[in-house]
Image (cartoon, rainbow, N blue to C red):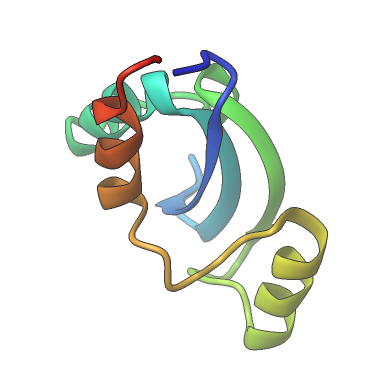
Length: 96
């Protein structure tokens, strides 16, 4: 499996001053599990440490339907995709 495969994940969080926010993150498959573990342990200081922030918005916990459509058009984001299952599938792939 190539090291340059990235997945898109929509992350909901609070800013340092307590405001709701979301970000669309492009993250390598290899880093995704560590990212999720760090989120669960509240050990994420910057999303940039894990991947590229493609879009974000402060003041809302999720993008509007219109913004979701734009994210799909621009980045290929699919809100109904189960990212964790996809990552497991990709990590299980054996190189030929």
